[in-house]
Length: 348
Image (cartoon, rainbow, N blue to C red; front, side, top):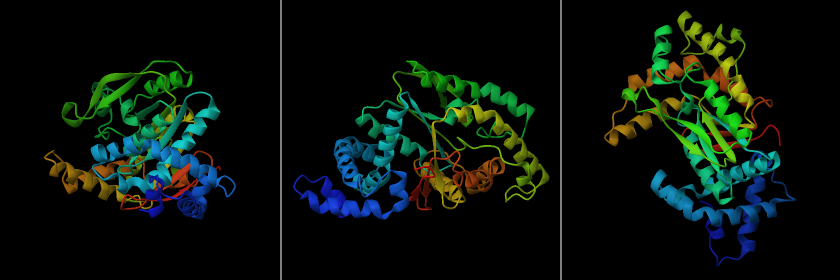
């Protein structure tokens, strides 16, 4: 951890010392500075605002680190300063300019930290006076009985998750109500543990006065691609059957476009190597087994992850998206050890 970060939280430190170090550090990463609108002209003002926010969120953030992340807050202080605080400030600014609730899409595969990011952003935004709603694409799944009927029509849909397994109208109705400032709204929720892990809808949540929606999911914002891409696709899309499945899932994405049109902004949590999600899934399953819960074997994990790569392969769908200035506002790279790398924006 940077020593000057600890000094910000100390009331007995001369401000000029850490402020100069903070100024140098914040301007050194030009891509991140551009993404968060930091310039040599406004850097001192940004430091003042961010340090004030840091102090105000520390009690709640410390508790969150200890109870939810099970790590000392010092281990996450740098990420809080460099990423989560400026990201929350950016969202608050967007909400102010918009004059109505902001719908922020968050695209990220397995293990990219979508849930943790939404929890921390909600915590910070609460300090800034904004009511945040975390909504997962998973919350929009069709009912268990509807998915059972779907699986009978198409036996290839062996797991929930791919395009076609969601109730798109359910999402459209909710986001439209929020965009129109209706309050309260009924938010669908999904219980993954129901029906021996097949999952089903559970009691919806009633939420009032939503300012910002953090809408996250493994293919939130993903768009259909040219079908020629499946002529020579990357593994594990190998057989003619694999290619047919991939083409069908690509076609299903067209139905999701109205949902993506409700997004005001889209950020991508982007692994520097998409294959990391396989290792991250193994780690998650090992942790569950160590905690006394049931978990998948290595072979089952491989089959599970390959299934989703066959449906929407990251190299075909995510990689071109992060290089596009049309739909993605912010890209946050993630290293194999879960640390955050480059942060950049196509727009600012």
